[in-house]
Image (cartoon, rainbow, N blue to C red; front, side):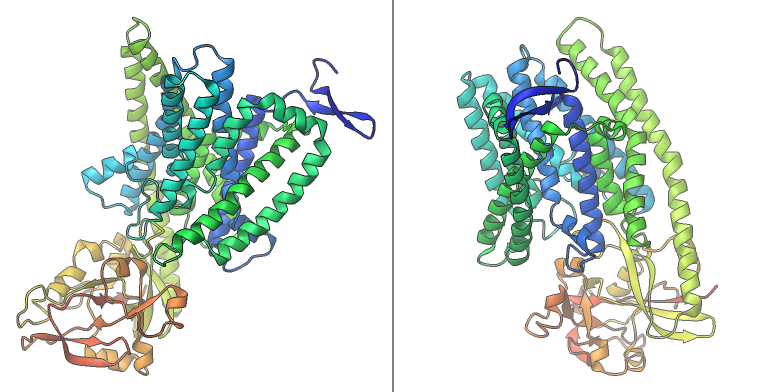
Length: 611
């Protein structure tokens, strides 16, 4: 059928010619496929949350915890394919390449970063100095963990531009670009992860390389498009059956390698070997899965207005989702199904609001660059547009974010008070926020154990050792009142963990909001030594809190925890050169640690008034 949706090609099956879509791999189809991939990535991230990265299976949906990289592979494929296809089909494509391509990815990236930084400032999860804030906005450090894709794709764009500008032989340039891409993957592989920071840095993490191979696949596909598609059409059902079965097989193989090898072994002798095995399996998985998707689209074109719309806001959706799933709604307490609905719905809604702004800004910047470097027209009008966009964005953020923050804080506080009313000794409750997880930037809900209930008040003690310090910086006899640790736990670092509403119900203890247990209280509140043993948080371990590695290997280490000794409150009458502690085994010792001994865990205590 000529001119319609379908066209007759040379593919034959049982004597009949097979109909293939005329829209195969056009821009409209490519965007819809990527929109589906973006939905898959969102489902992947939510599934990781509800299944603890696959450790707590939730039925068939658990597989999404393992296959997010396969959806990202589609983004890389279409990026590579689009570069070479445009280079071959458009005259002087390299001439305006940087002015068109870079703003299209960097402007949404920067605008999203600005909004996230502003949101985190108002939500109280970002206490960075000015320089760190600038780095977050520009992308030197990634305040949005999904931003890694933008940085990597910009690097690949620049490699493409330089190589194809210098090397005039198309095949040689293609080979060089593929080689450089593989070298980027290898370099990232050897960088490992971010074990000592709660922010994402360049080249760190398997996401920098486990799906990148499909950028090369896209390049080669575009370069040899006619030959590849002739083979696909001639043996369509054979190709589709084989790649479909191989996709299922490679998913199983990828899950197996992740469980038995994986990427997170930088600190053991075979870490690179394990990561390389996993990378090899996942690279094959990406190519097989991408080929299967292409074959399906060759015969079954997508015709969804919803996907078309999502394709038009694709990059903004990808970036906004990173903030929603990892920061904004990370701690919502709802059913699993509702979590999927809320996170995906809020991500799309947020992207729908931001996308018109980013699209307008991209258009204005492109015009500005064209006027500045291509014609004699004045760029002042475009500069004015960009300035207006930034001013409106900041204004909306200043108005909307505090309102959202206030609503969230009020809801949290109401829930806390309701739980406090019925809380009994031994219960674990949430109160305030504090940074405890390296892989979850921001301040997580802080958990406390109820250690005493007295009339209309509760005594809460942190469930874990959340920080560490010496009792006093200098080696000298000191009282609790004059100690540095007392000043520390009543500084902004700790008291800033509570909202204004929460601070209002905290009872002062000799003028302090936070304190430590006395040895007498530590004896009274716990049944035995074992009950006094504690685990420390990831961030506390990173910041130098003592780690008791020789003991409890099976009990603590297999759970990702480490045990430590922790400080108690000393005398307030007679200065002393030592301070009381609870040892790693849970015994109370009065004179073992000198006051300037570093590495002791801090386990704050707070009294609250019931309402």
